[in-house]
Image (tube, rainbow, N blue to C red; front, side, top):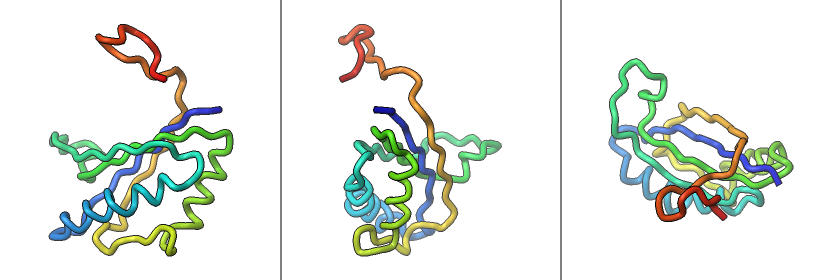
Length: 120
């Protein structure tokens, strides 16, 4: 089975950061993880200022891990569920977002205590 990563860059509507983060962590991520093929999610907040970078436009990033041989099918399901009872959206998320999808070329390696062993 192929391994992919989907990088999603987002922002909260100004003044609605608490609602955005609550909704994203407690509602949206579990809804996305309910889609077959999406197996993990990690949410991150930008801490560095790179004023000239395209990524500086976004405060939040979610990295989704996918295990699937049907990447298009997974995203088709995501689009079908978006803004339905299965995946309600929040007015606290800005509509300007960016999505990037990546295919893994090698397994993830662990450092130090696992000394080069592949992650299971």
